[in-house]
Length: 345
Image (cartoon, rainbow, N blue to C red; front, top):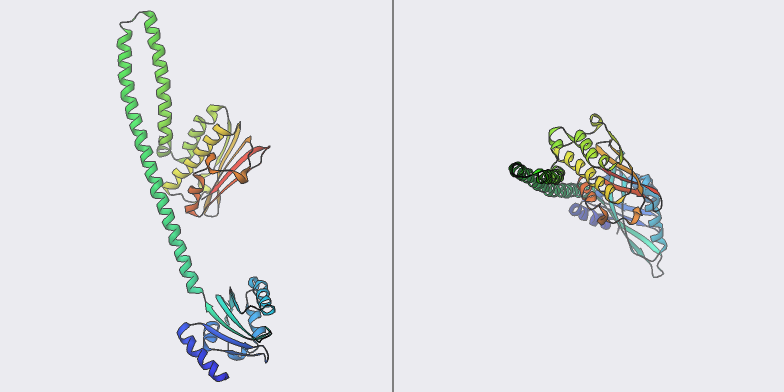
């Protein structure tokens, strides 16, 4: 019977590449197919005491969990168990394995025999990692395609606005100059007032165009573009801002991340101005390993950060960080001053 079982297990292992074992709980005798030796490198004599050999080679981080689960199985009336864990090979390395177990019981549900298979998951895990890398790359590429299209559209609108503004301004200035030559003193004063109002309106439109496609970002880089953004938004609203940005100590940034950093800070500045009642803001860009960390703090009204909805000005932040295996965190408390947004990407 013993030789027949071993023959069948070896025949089966030649097809499945799995290690197959059997333990008689009455005699405490264990049987193994050749697959067990091929998988882990142990001689059959070393595996003779199945329980001690097996538990001694389960990874320390998995041992308590797996041994506890196995113990519960033997005390129950269940017949099937499976688990994933790391198992130590003869050379000291660990392999991820899938262990599947069947319990043979008597009519009183007492466990008599265990039959198990151990499968090396190294290739499976590698394929899963490769698939996850592919999914991440696909998600990143999709995001970048949409982000770049959006930026291109914003630049197109900005360029068109500026071109139209210049044409309109030139035409109106000519008409006002001509009209003033035919108007009395009161009429000339009214034309001057109209010109001032017109220039103010055009200045607002130009500011909108610059926000759509900031020329400072293209001409002078991220640091100076952010300083210009802070001056034209926060400081223009009498909100003090402390800005910390050591570009030399940051990881290399591709062009799209430079624009992304700008958009993130631009969005949060808008949130602060419109919703926070803050009078002081701190903005820093720092380094964490190979990633950059953007931290924006203000002393405005606190909110329930745990239940903050994306509709409250944060709809883009999760989309900005997720494709780059980054993170997005908000810290704030209702009834207390202070609000912190931190993004790592």
